[in-house]
Amino acid sequence: MPQRAAPVKLAQRRRLRAPAGVFHALFVRKHRKNHLTPPHAMCMRLFARFCLSKAKSACDVGTEELSHLEIVGTIVHQLTRKMTIEEVKAAGLEPYFVDHTAGVYPQFASGTPWTAATIQSSGDVIADLTEDLAAEQKARKTYDNILRMSDDPDVNNVIRFLREREIVHYQRFGEGLRLAQERMNQKNIYAINPSFDR
Image (cartoon, rainbow, N blue to C red):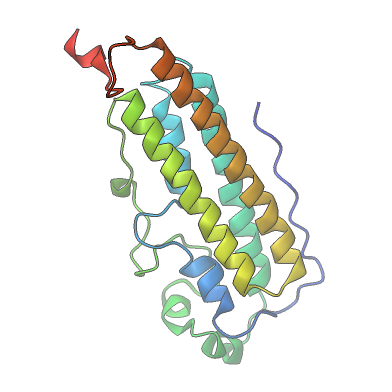
């Protein structure tokens, strides 16, 4: 069962307090192209259940990633809901504001909207778990970078929680990869998935 998401409490927040551009870096443009975003992670994990023999773990992580999307969306909403036009301009958010006002809209650093076209499911348990491991490390690194830039203790506490969960996901996928490799033929030194060739 996935761990329940930490509640987001930014009740004292009335306006964007972060320095100019930090909101932009934190959420609007936090992910480099092809890095893990909460909707990206959720889809990858939920679809992984079809090729993994122990699919419950991937499904649980996918469900938890959905709660991460809600947490990040709540932070963005609470930080931006009372922004003035001056704060929008100071933060460099004019293009985002023109299209979305203060709405929460997932997009990549390039400004490209998130789409399911960016996810991959190869049907090969080794390839998919290896991709999951890399994606979890990219997400952890992204949260590390946010923590380096942000000076908001409320936001940082939530980001630390999300970062910790990415580490746990990495560990679970590592265990899954180890179990998958142990079940393979011991002569299969390249750890390829022979199921397609049966």
